[in-house]
Image 1 (spheres, rainbow, N blue to C red):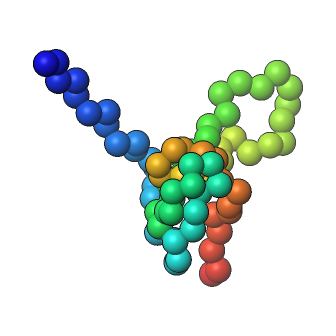
Image 2 (tube, one colour):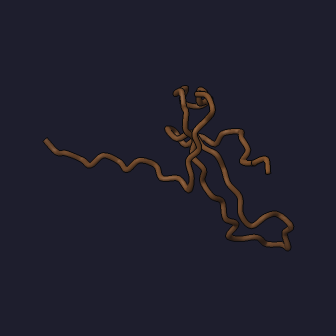
Image 3 (tube, rainbow, N blue to C red):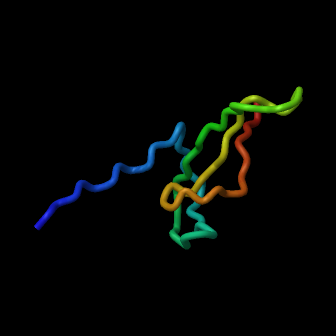
Length: 74
């Protein structure tokens, strides 16, 4: 019997706890935590006014990109 190591849990740049659980539209799992992954622009063939960095919010189970926004009230 061969024992293959368990895959490492996904690592995110940040994790956020939801105020109330929601169901992932992709995998259907009820989630109470979402992950945040950083985007960094690496190449552009023109002068761009777009930001060099950004973030995507993903399901912590299947990594499906969710329609969400990071923001805060100051």
